[in-house]
Image (cartoon, rainbow, N blue to C red; front, top):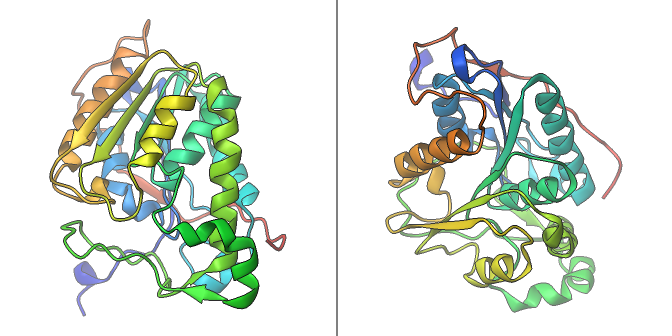
Length: 281
């Protein structure tokens, strides 16, 4: 196998920023059982525009389902929270962003910190499968389940680790994260931009309805994604997400001067280091 065809391993991504946009930071969170690879093109697009970008690899992710089962939702949130605080300390205006569960975590961060804004793609707050209401009991009777498959998705596949199975202990933690974040949404005061796929086999429409109902911010914009499935950051509507989120960051980063295009900076770097909390779930 040639070097160019070797799959990229999951790892954190970071870029210090360059040019007029270097003072604008964007911390991006990947989703449940995913990795930074699912949002890497988004991160690289923003980095090419000169933004400082950070995408941590959440604990229990990028490895295998057994590792995921050992972590609590607080571990996932704390890893992203630390990445945001580090980036915010180095920039003048710092935004949060995320895909799926990553959008949920980004919004929880927005409820707890003075973020400049939040841009989220298919954020989750609810489940299609009603059996999840009994997950606290089911996890003791059944150890794993199979992940949700989108049969018609055109998103590019990524090698995020061995997650051929999903531990029910982790699904229970995901439900707890949804519940905890819903309680905090009224505290979000920053502007929020939501990208929502018309067809999403993973996150039901009720998630957007809950977000509209609970969000404290008066500035909420929803952009439909007609051609993409759940992992829209790798699907056909990805350019729309990249362009409109960049415009969103530019418009809410005032009084900083932001340019839509800038000369290319240093080579983008992927940071293999990650923070892990090994406390059992």
